[in-house]
Image (tube, rainbow, N blue to C red; front, side, top):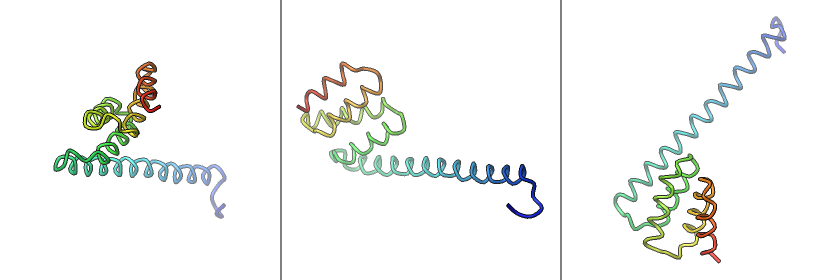
Length: 112
């Protein structure tokens, strides 16, 4: 503790610094995700047949809680490649997170 600072002021300054660091982390993380989404959308705009990029975009949407968009991406992959194991697993996870357990199990059983 620095000389001349009371214990309360010191703790308050430490909490302020920590909260600024934590909030900056989440802001930076959000910006990074938005940049990745924009980059993948640009790639897919020029080459929509790129399944791996489409899957990564779906995962980013799912990570951000945008389950409808993620579902759309994974279903688009399955239209092109109905046996794509990554897309089958991911669409199952989307339905699981949406609370649609029967639909999730249907896709996960397809993996078996």
